[in-house]
Length: 384
Image (tube, rainbow, N blue to C red; front, side, top):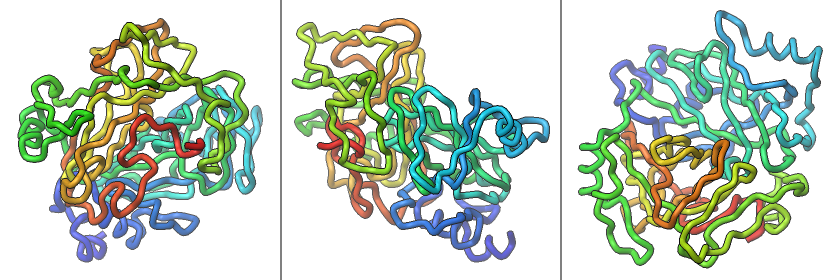
């Protein structure tokens, strides 16, 4: 690692603490820290993350799992081959809803001791109601690559509302790499950033003061918007297979039921359905920082508010603060029992982290996105 550290300070022991930006990610690729069995295109690298892509082979398995005590994922998958079946992803492959699959990924890593990573589903994966969690040999946590890890990466995939179609090279998740395990920003730090950058605006473009949204747990809380003519979408049952290889292709009404504004301002969510909503506030992420939505926070309700939690530097902000925010879209599922929500009720929690450096590209500016400037928007696979 001496040679790599000499060419790029991000791998040196005294490198800056924080999330690695796009230009550092390219160096990880150039130096072989991240390797891939197929060439990457520029759209795979985001301001603070890199997409991971499905490999050639998959396995049907009975349940999600992790490995410990020296057991390798490859050994477990060999066991499953005798009782279940394998999938060939060199051609479009059908995955049945509410069945668990594991896929090898095209990428693998050799991290130095101070680099680790977290994984999240991509926005398009979350909005297709598809559970996608990273696993690696020996890790005690899903969606986590420990510092110093060297080896292959695998993805657990569990479609929930819809059958889906996938193929080798499709990106369902992404990883965000961290140097020296940076802490989440504290409440005091979050207030200071808010003062410098103005994080939240209302729908008329007026600044929102932080007092009602920064809770004293290091989090920024956003609320649900039930005031528009259409406030959200509810998943339909018995829909056709959702082909994740095709963008702008599927008819919305085959998969989603629009939810009209409730006359009472309140709405009951049912555990049998998956929902898409948006925030009442417009949020922006300044380019020196990145944000993540906590998927489950019991303090504001027994529900999961988000599947795809990474929000890149520049979201709703632009490159130099020229934008006045964008709505956050929630991918929601309540747990066990029905739950009533009210217009303006707190619905999700953002945490912020510092970047190791300002990324050379900003979300939705240098790389266009289906979701920049979004209102209530379904995934990219559906017709507008």
